[in-house]
Image: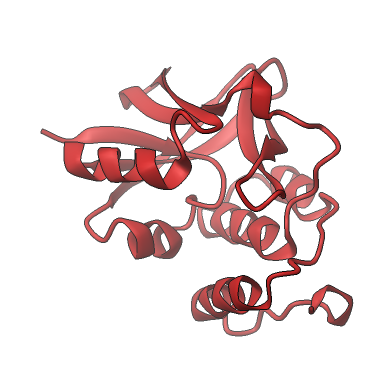
Length: 174
């Protein structure tokens, strides 16, 4: 039996999610009305990661089918119990879908995402042809350069696999 997963952040793009969970199957897209997307969850690397919260103009999502084993693996990747909690949302056409919400103890509105993280979110939104104003809002989120050169290079290599024309801005390169 497959589980539905509603992705909204760096897992939006199928290439990114399948790098983590090779059998993930994209089912389509949906919108979570009355919610907002924020880059305010403190990641293990100290940067801002995405989370959703009630209130707002809505969040665009990609819905994937996962096995129970893959969902458990995603729980570990996302850090359930270490900043995220898994939450079930009900979406038209898809029903109950698992997603992740930042625990209040890990929310910090002063955080900025790393440039590569923001770019993965934008690439996913573009891939799914989300509303232009939604993509523009994501693309204008202030981002920081990742001080870890290896992590920076690893993620930009993935971005360039998805879109060979994407390059980090010179000011963003470590």
